[in-house]
Amino acid sequence: METKLWNGQNTADLAAAADTLRCGGVVGVPTETVYGLAANALDEDAVRQIFLAKGRPQDNPLIVHISNIESVEKLSSSFTQIGRKLAQAFWPGALTLVLKKSDIVPYIVSAGLETVGIRMPSDPVCRRIIELSGVPIAAPSANSSGKPSPTTAAHVMYDMSGKIDGVVDGGSSKIGVESTVVDVTGKIAVILRPGAVTKEQIGAVIGVENVKNFVETADESFAPPSPGMKYRHYAPKQPLTLYVGAPEDTYTAIMRDVKPGGAVLCFDEYAHCFHTTIPYGKSYDKDEQARRLFSCLRSTENMDADIIFAQCPREFGTGVATVNRLKKSAGGKIINVKTKDIIGVVGVSGSGKTYISRQLAKGHYLINADELYDKMLKEHTDMIREIGSEFPEAMSGGTIDKKVLSAQVFAKPDALCTINKITHKYIVKEILRLCRASSAEKIFIDAPTLFESGLDRYCTEIIGVYAPQETCIARITQRDKISQEQAERRLNNMHNMDFFTAYCDKIIVNE
Ligand code: TXA
Ligand code: MG
Image (tube, rainbow, N blue to C red; front, side, top):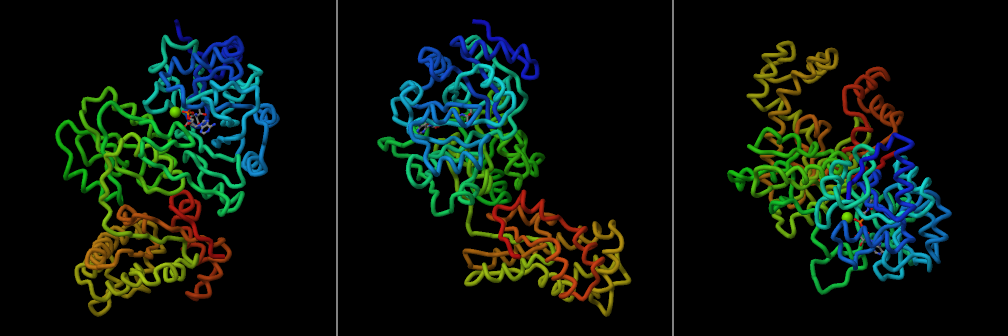
């Protein structure tokens, strides 16, 4: 069979793909999560072709994709209250709702279950194809069974060429990991597979008490409610070992273990550190890691490497989905290199991060980077000497006058760079020394420049403290007796809240 390649931007091509689906064919289609292998969900013979092309076990059900919410009433005999709420909040989007199926859904789609997974994707090309075809579309991820999911049309072609009717090219998948699968047949939502929509986001809509994770188990005899969970998945050609811990610790451990012939799936910051690397995003950029993961795992296929070492991201937010996929691709070869919890606390000036740090760190060890810095300006001779040679005006009787130094630094942006280069080096070293010397199992670091100094890479968790800009300005002007303009200037010199919201593992609101 010749597999056609259709252009997702071309109307005639979309019509041809939709016609193929209506007539019982199988087509690779783009979605915002990963590419799907689509067929008319109401046509048993067409759906059978999906299982054949994928080599998928018959007991693993398919998700039915729809383009309007009314379709749910046809596919499900009971659209529960909780299901409706989640559909309203997250559709179109990366959430699959498992509901009681209606009689029109063939058992081959549900793999014999009385439930059906339903999703309304947001990808416009996918939506258009569903609308034009006029039928609900059953579609698993478009990879050969066991392989990493495809995030480009080329990936689908690689796995499916000659086996299906065509592939619609809609560009790279925006999200890169599959949808969150949630059982909403009961009173509370049970997450069967973590995905792009996080547990926290679901909790924010229906209440945290109404959502729980289905605990995964490696026990083969156990019957998982989401049959897909029992299979080894996302496996690259080579065996993969996953290292869990703070980025610097996984880097050090891999450095120790890597041998010639080993490739390292690493964060961008470490791309230059090993001989053969597959960088998959900055260590703190979970969305980017999700977007690139499958493509990176696939790229190892043609690589001259016989083993893969992988740095594991922090398991928060979308990181939960990425870590879940990585653990499956490792097939149990997981090395935990974490020795203690090191929790960084960040936030813009005036957000109240110091107050929050003190609350969080009760009963644990807290390092306040600002206080440490003040102490080092008085006592740390090497740092004092180096600052003094760049900013001689700030020297005063063998120590640094912080007021004079600050005035100079905030006046000129290049001076900020110079001072940071000097101080970050010493402060990071000192904080790491304190962490190592401490016997505490949980250490909090209150550090305004956690990311700029690179300290974030030593953290097992990063908490961002949020307060509205006006609140921050009011707090700083009052606390530090400075003007509104000075306060604004100070805030402009730092990462803003959008940065923290995007890159922290958790956000605490402190209004
Ligand atoms: O983002 C996605 O979900 C992608 C795109 C194409 O929509 N699809 C996808 O499908 O990942 P698939 O077949 O690779 O994974 C579907 C998962 C499987 O783990 C399956 O067991 C579970 O959803 N699932 C489907 N229907 C179910 C049901 N009725 N009950 C429990 N789990 C179900
Ligand atoms: Mg899949």
